[in-house]
Image (cartoon, one colour):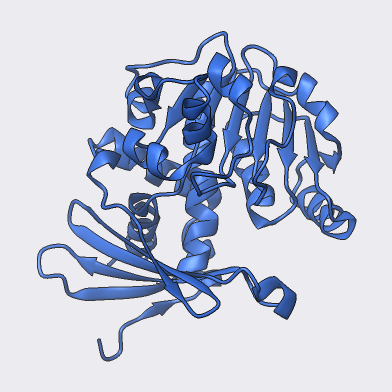
Amino acid sequence: MTGLPFVTADEVRRRVGPDDARRLVERALRDGFDPADDPARSSVAAGGGHLLLMPSVLGEWAGVKIASVAPGNPARGLPRIQATYLLLDAATLTPRLQLDGSALTELRTPATSAVAADHLAAPDARRLVGVGAGPQAVEHAVAMAAVRDLDDVALVGRDRGRLTAAVDGLVARGIPARAGSTADVADADLVVCATSAGEPLFDGALVRDGACVVAIGSHEPDRRELDAGLMGRALVVVEDRATAMRECGDVVLAVEEGALRPDALVPLADVVRGRSRATDRPNVFKGSGMSWQDLAVAVGVAEAAGR
């Protein structure tokens, strides 16, 4: 471990851009990786929150992310989630790189959503509604703009200051963003939910047939961003059925309420490999965030450095 190179957040972003990350995540699925083989993320209570341990193996590489979740941190001016990542070669399990894990999370989550949206959203999708004004909402707008020619991006947020900063940041990056409301969902081709909400963010009946909805904010079985009505009439795509039934409240609660059957869930790999396609119903991708996605992007960082 002596002298193990550390890749800072800025360097991670320099080596792998948002659309590079999308291609890396999709490459893992096209190369035959089955997310069902990924170990379940483990959570341990610790101090003011909990620790998450997320290991994975992809071909010649192995890796593990250690993330801390401290709900009280924002009040202290600190990030709610912080992380570090260790990349190893799979043959000898020798550590090769240590990376900023938060930067990996910021890249891989919207990258995975963009993989799904690229297959599920209409080719001529133009209007995006993003519910949330944090980093993930912003980076999801950037990722979606890379796969569709967006001409209207409406962000919805409760904190006016954060919302204004998010809109201004997107405009500065060349994305036609504005402040919006959940009423904009009715006209949206793409909807991204990236919040910490525990209850549905809007009436699912607003979502029109053929629209694509991405929900990535809730990671607990008793919390959700989408209502059962929407989940029941949509094609629902998940990274892995077992993970969704364990961690995703949008799925778990819709199943418990009788609106959705577990066997109706479509694995993302089936969509990427052409075994399942978008429908003329709403097309929902519920992402939980899995270990293999961090590793796919971390491998890209290592490859960019020639390691």
